[in-house]
Length: 518
Image (cartoon, rainbow, N blue to C red; front, top):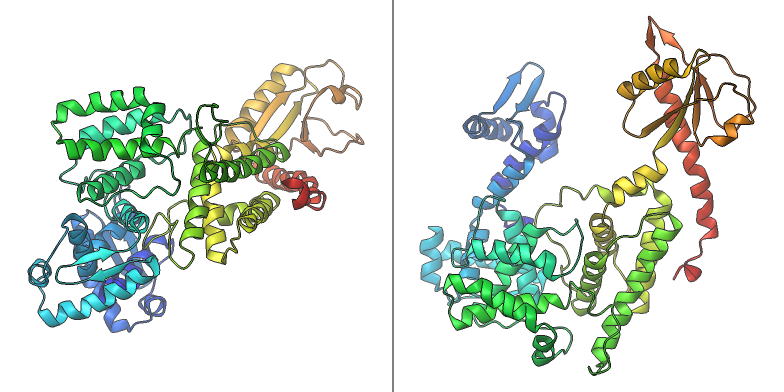
């Protein structure tokens, strides 16, 4: 989709991106190299950007050292990313097509304030940009064609990235009703997941309802009859119908809302994970989906067991992973599964973080994703594997704090040869200076020796006296410099101890064969 961005707009965004993330002064020549443009173009763009930034109560500071950017603390790079969309005619056209079922060439020219020849050139670019998404653009009237799931996936990602949390871009859909239904979904799906992106869920719901109202029906990948669905969730149907009554929706509109919510019930509940009651006939599609979901569930449970992660409700994660894999199988040559168009999510760094800090976990995740996909006849491309890995890491409930607590948290035992109150004072001082990854315990016994230490669990022993103990944990003398604890020295030892603690985990990698893992 970057080909739809005019070169001057792309250059200005690259300049902003470079100076936004730089902690140092950025020279004109450096910006020219980063943007593959001339210094003259950079100077011209900077003048335009200065007015833009000033409007935000920010400032582009120039000096002999170079250029720096200052912004109000509430403004992030996402503000400039959304603003980039506003200036791109191609995205204006796509959005207008989404909300209007048929648009003539003349209407498109008036909307974009461009000539007939300019529109023709733009249409060629848009067609090329949509092709990787499995979508086709026709003209006069303008319409987007393709599998309905691909169309909805594309526009859900677009609206999520294009608009801020404060903006509601669906004028014909009641936000109050969407919010009420969205709140109900948490109870409705019977999931305690804190990792569900409810803002994106609202956008998906609005996109789906808009398409339903335009007479584009939802395509269910599994043949579950509607009577079966409504029979199972009769109580939920009644509740949703009651919630819609104050908004005076037409029968068609009400049915569109109801269809979407009832369809989602099948994919965000334990329905397919639970063994069905005997009165319901099992179709081959049902059995297939149940097997697929249970494979993913087993993988997550095994990973949790190996890395001592607490049990959690992973329903959302299981369905999310399965949906992405299913889409890769259904549409192997398209871009689907990404919840973004131009810009990676802000937490996309998780892939790099886990690869560097928890390489064994990261490796096992990828190997088992590959194994699951292989069983389904899917050979993943590198980009698809990265996306699936990101999906797992970003949707696993409390994964980061749990991994951090298990593998990065250090237990310090403090001993004072004076008394426990003195040790308490030292522990308070250490707590205020060291980071949150440290837990501190005070040694309270009247005597200290190697045998009495066996009653304590710790990674480092801090002492006010030199100790010549032969124990596996480091023993650190509480050194002071000018009356203050030598925290810099302590942090070096703490970092080294954390690395040492991770080594046994790395050795376990050889013991974990994938065949026995699943």
